[in-house]
Image (cartoon, rainbow, N blue to C red; front, side, top):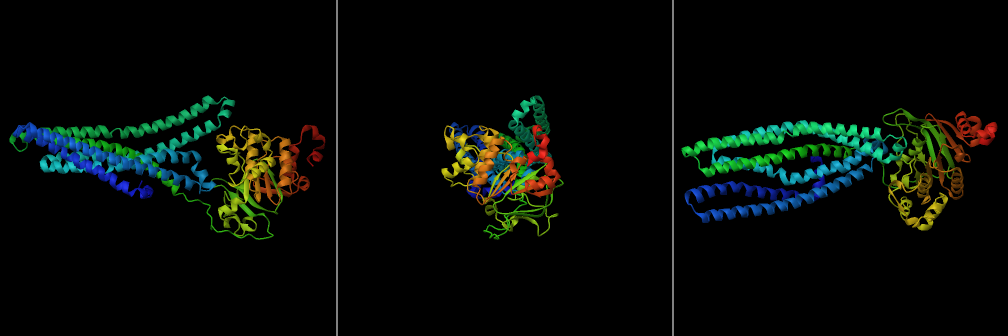
Length: 589
């Protein structure tokens, strides 16, 4: 929790005034038993004065009203500080997550990050409020009650010290044992978040295979694990209140017992006994608050540790400069030099890849499933870095003659229009989605991009055209429509490099052909890279790269590769219809 105190720097006033208000309330509360003692000893036993009793009663009301006002001020300041800090924590988490590379995002996982931004941030926010309201008040009440008890009777105050010591030891033992348990509970919450997200996003697949029962069992098992972990922690935490009550009540019995003896011998008055019992009751109530506060703080400590883990995670991919980097004229648009890559927990995905692409060329990338096609294009915008252990120091990925590691992210990625494998649309309007890359694009530019992507026909028929609503994930559009909208989005702003990662998979052959023809006619000087499984899609490309098991099996044009590259020929022949089986080679050409 201490590491997160920087989020309270704008709320120093609230963090100081709030506890002071609570301390003032506690001071007033410590005077109440003394007033009660005076009412009994002076007003009733000695003077028999109803007026004195009434005046002291009004004083009690005044103390209560003043204490309530002070507590309300504290509540206001605590709420302001905790809500403000919670907002800052969520914003900082989201901003930091967006600086992380795909490597860190893969390791932390999306469900876990969502849980940390929501559940963990909420718990830390609650802890901040409780700390401001109660952390100073409860110890002050305990210490103040001990001191006031010592002023009344030093020997009986030893009972107070013994009770406080026993309760303190109990709090320490519970806290040390439950913190690891609450960390485990949070991890189980992550698992439930993962399963829930999978089931809700893949609901149609689950129903199609009639897997509802099995998936319910999976979620049920995860919920059962969470329940068992929570029960284990709760069993230990549940000891706090009973132990606190038992110790305090035993202390009250001892105070009344030995106090009665002292009253009989004349060393103490009845009011003193009432005051001591009141102070012991105050300690009891304060310890109950401390017990609950300990539970909240153990949960909050676990949540704070998970938040700090994200904030302290350094991105493995960092930009060397924010300044514009000059490019080299007459150099290839894209060049791979002896590039190798592997994910942090796996074998090599790419091995010694080398090729160059001239400006304005159309490049097709094809290969068997899992051969590294998407990984290769993800190295270009630097979503991942090449493997330094297997890539020579003079090797790497170059754009316009400059290593991508030398570019600032904005300069590198602003010239790239990318359509990933999974078509992702955001809630809003069609216009909002198309302007994601270029916020200043006018309607003419958007319509041009839609026409090239073969999406204008269905967008123009929507009730509100470009202002038509896009639901979360674009679920109100078909798979082919989503792909075409994503392609149109990448085309807005005329990117110097257009990367289409298997972006024609949901298109029929006629739409595929029309889109490729429109791209060829309108791409200008843009370099286009198309990752695909279809030979027909890249048949007319200026350069075709054939990947096989992470290696470059061939590079060239369609006709040359069909003759010289066995992997490419197999892929082409496997995609010919049986009706053309008699002359597959000619059909492929």
